[in-house]
Image (cartoon, rainbow, N blue to C red; front, side, top):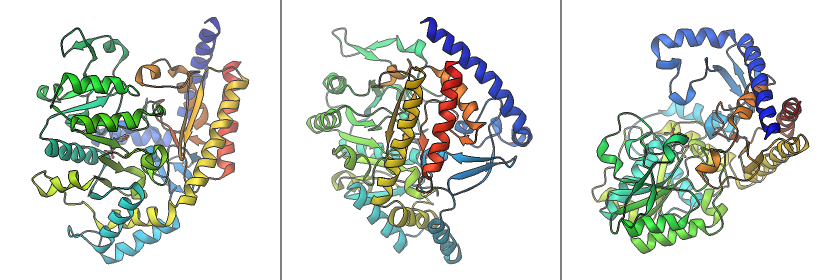
Length: 461
Ligand SMILES: Cc1ncc(COP(=O)(O)O)c(C=O)c1O
């Protein structure tokens, strides 16, 4: 314990020193932040883009690199929160966008290329039918609406700690603070203790709280119990098959199949949120990687090749509800601009071979970071799946959200400024992962590993 306290103290010193260096290096970001504060709350376009005391504002990207507004170059491992698996300004994506710019980027009428992208998405993710939307939020929102329409039920089960976008139905128990976790609802009688359903945002109607049942990830018994406690009331179980907002938490063997079986038994829909997993962990997403199909699934991020897109789909017996009264629409759905980028990404860039290469680079990165932590006795582990991976500062693997609360955030904060000062652009929170692109090289990965090894050495003192 004394050693851990020493490491934490050391991490605080590193964070203080490196943050000062970072602030000295980024006067352009500081100035842009001051300007942005006048028109944008927090000076950013989305709460996730905020930074303390200000975020690093980017100017451009090419290949595996990005440049900030001060002209500093970085290797990009942020990947636009998991979107940029194609890298930046990929020639095939640029060409596709150029072509469509000449031919009309928006009609609100379905085009042949929209149909072609729907076919490509159905083929690779093994969906019978799909519909387009414009973001991951819309994708999970519509998938849940379809599940509710098909079952005629209101309630959903979600995993503690999971994020499924910012619509009202799912903004519950997303990274709840540790101090509220001790509180438990007692529902279903017989003293059964359940996880608390905690709203994550102000402005969520009280009426929705009772529609969300929260259970721990990797616990199929808790899901079965929830079904038994709410007979005939649960429309769907929604989960990220690999939890990706608390590092990387993989499903334990048999877990996904048990959820599918429970949903079948109780007449509900198993809904995968593959917004992050879909285009990153394998050519065919979760279904390919873990072999269990959902009834419905939501996609976004990487499947648009960097353009704004979302999609959801699955079994036709569910999808047909969009023609039987479940509202599913949107002016920009399947617009030619996003579709051109998505089609080029999925059919020309993110091929099966590309995922082999992403997997090799990801494993090289994870192994390099693990070696560095082991050598310096830093309590942590790495996890990688295809283009995604991360360091989590806890020796044992994570199985659910409460394990994540045992990681050591001080180490992450120290590493963030350390890495960024050495040309490695990372996401600003310990809940995120790295994203590698098809334009990353072994040299790029080695730069990360070298900077991280120096960090571990510094931390160990
Ligand atoms: C798992 C998951 N689902 C849904 C979303 C929401 O996607 P979007 O930001 O495109 O609305 C995100 C975004 O980070 C996500 O990580």
